[in-house]
Length: 343
Image 1 (spheres, rainbow, N blue to C red):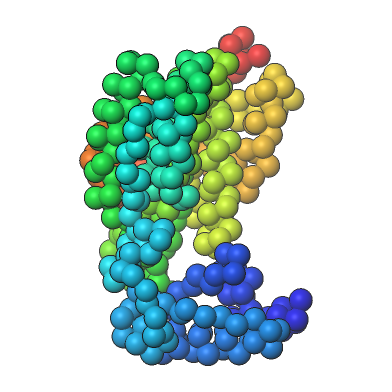
Image 2: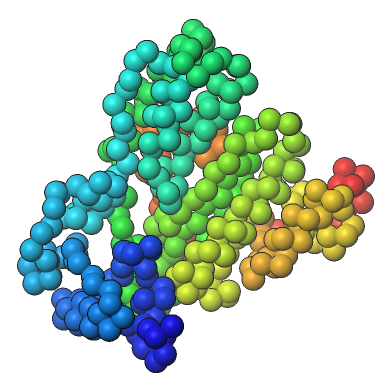
């Protein structure tokens, strides 16, 4: 509580930019970085906390703040010199059993969902293994083994995906927007959030911020219900991102290609079944629930099997879109509401 007695920029960093005992923040210049280090160290030392192992993506700043930079690659895939992240694939273990497959998959460290199109395939494969009923230390059946080896071979290219840490935001940017998309298939549903920046010179830059995927339940659900679950996933994800990045509601845009979901959202939750009503209520009570619009999506990379090397080009398509072109502005039509399908 002592740290928050006086509201300053440094105390705000303590509140906002700590993950457990690690400070993760940024600056616009070397001078600002040195000031942050000095003031942060002084503030925390008053309460008996000592910050150590300072490191920066700027090598000149590193020479002034740190003597021990460690290895080129951090244990979690961070390349300090290029300021990029990558996902590392653990070595294959044999024989290929249920236990070893699940162990391999769990070691794919991707907390922000930067390579979700790859990881979701492994999630659906785990579901298949469980449904097959084989024991933990039993080798996979021939069909499952072929599928796993094909996926594993494709997955070897995942380390070629280099994800920049910096999403190219600056204090003098003209506009910063969040664009969130959700979609679903019979196998899975997903949500993804991009940041779209118009800098001081009017240049548009787009970067992937985060995504989240979930395997469809074993108990079969209709596609519209899965689309609704994807919309709920997006509501949770984009709310978290907007709060962390301090993006105003007016700059948040959310999209779905499901006219059924928009129809559900256009009326009071009490009109629908318990399953639908609860999820509609959750979306509408979020800060951006009234900003969900319809757009034909190209998100099959998240909800269908994909090739690993095809992932990268999906990240920057908003870069090509002029203002407003990414939203067709469609809303639910009254004819959908009259259908008994929604009850």
